[in-house]
Image (cartoon, rainbow, N blue to C red; front, side, top):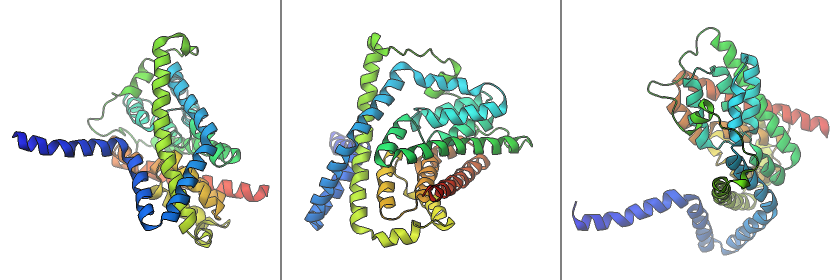
Length: 351
């Protein structure tokens, strides 16, 4: 390759690296820039709405960042390994509970799942954890309570655990006939950072500040979580401002309002392609509920989108055999619909 070719390739490589590292911030900036050109008044309103929403959410944001950094610095996430011992039904219940409260990020769940399956942990318990984990964690609970309300946060937590138990028991019953043997694709091993937590769980160090290395890890985790949450919440609040400005409330009410089964079914299916990110989805759902979206439909959207969003689905497809993937999607959607329907019935009964 000549020097001229190398010189021409460097700017493109730099732009590509910038896009991959800052694409969420760039998307927000592009939206504001386009608004400034096409509708300057709306640009100003959207910017003010975004900054105001970030300020209102700041206390919950700080608390959620602290929880995530604390979990990484103390090693509390290693406690997840203890959920996978015991009888099948006990493992399912504990795995669902662990998935519903664990602070694992999406990048850490997949290698852990591969390790669990490769080491012979029953698919029923793994599926219970797998379905519950993307829906809720301590940081998500705090932000859900702040952006929506505590009642919704509790409902989402119960939905995560219930979805895990439902999926785990269903797989346990199906596995008795031998239909789900060897769930992993050929060549998928048990490597990854998640596997080490199961093979050799380390003790939790609650007084992490006494060790310089753990203090440094707390700082790194806090900064990483801050950047992650800030970029997604900024984009989410920006999109929410446009949604509130441009989507007529009567349209939302017609599609997703009311107490019938239809809005919950639509929200379950729409949640799969429309879901951006667990944190970004919260203010969007909050805005939709303010415009008439049924609470049950909102919960169904969050649960279905969290489990079967495109990035998660791609990772699952690469990991397991097609029939296991199909079962994963089926359990996700049916469980999300059921939790949304139950929450809607409870909301109507409590009025």
